[in-house]
Length: 109
Image (cartoon, rainbow, N blue to C red; front, side):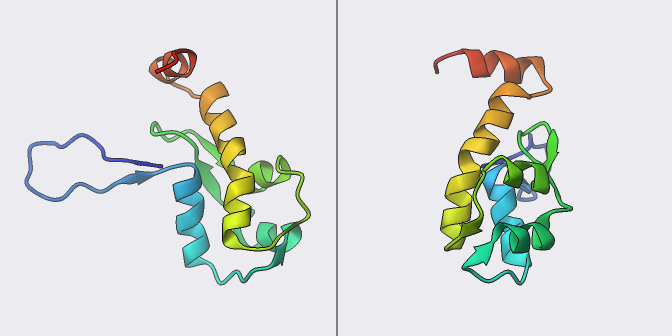
């Protein structure tokens, strides 16, 4: 996911803040990781990265999120993303640092 930060009144195009799967995807595009890949190979490539999981910038170590997938290997980049998606959604819903984020996770809309 990505969220545009509030504009400060200037006319420049705002940058997006990438978090969750979008942040993982950006890091994967910057890496030289090839698929299929073992979880160990993926961890070596991205394990030390702190990945933001919400728009307020709360982060989790990629290696910690990867360990929660319980997968040993990934056939494709999409396979990795599909495994990580529920992990990042759970982080966003359960560990959001902001009060507003916590309230949003409780509301059905």
